[in-house]
Image (cartoon, rainbow, N blue to C red):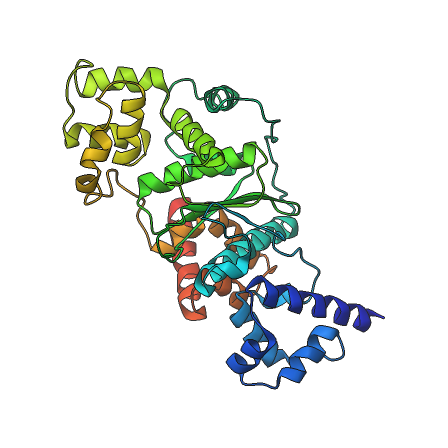
Length: 374
């Protein structure tokens, strides 16, 4: 009976994994160099792939092998694309679909690790009914989080503490559009945010706040391009500006760093302000225009020059992959490995590294921990 259950679960997961990437049976067969009929039989539960083939399928589908052995939720059936009229995963290039699947896999992995360690994530906020304006919602959240009028020093850490899963992965370009982020409230994993790691730090911070607005409003699973001028995006965009750059503090900081309200700020002045709120020059410029601290149109007139200077505050040190996954996930995964809950190969898969580099990282982390303990 146990074997039958395993086959039933396995076939379902094989179908989910393939369909998540929008791959046809023939494509999978060609990529793995196997007969298409075998894949059909595996997906119907008539037989199971050999372990070696299962590893190859896991690599192809951007999943770990245990994804195929236990029941796991599929990706949301539909994603609401804020990109022209695209409505299905198949409308996106395969490289983009792979990033979305990797994001889903990381959220799944994190939830399973938390369960294994008996450290379930607590979600400390709930979606609200529509009706609030962006300003009202931002003010409400800042009060709930005890932020007063001060800048948010580490938005990633703050929202993670509220139960949001956040990962930063490089999303490939789509012609004529730039994908800034993605968010969904997953029925199994809770609120999740994907941020385009290719964007500069200030834009990434703004994207996190933008996607948080979608989660607060319980919007459908959404892929966002921040430049699109439609109601849902305008709301999230304005929420992010109010949430990250509270008016009272921005006005006070402007006087301290720039001068009187009629003073024209230099790029250096704007850079200091952007650094204070952890946003890009563009976001800072548009917020100053909104507060009538600089003339309307200033941002559009100077944005081409600002784009040549994309980073305005010091980022975190360390390899890029660590920044993308986040300190919280990495520490959680290392703990799970040390307690025997996940193998070194699975840990390497989650980290996106080979086994050798992962083992070196474990040794470095252990040495660093020992030094701190000493």
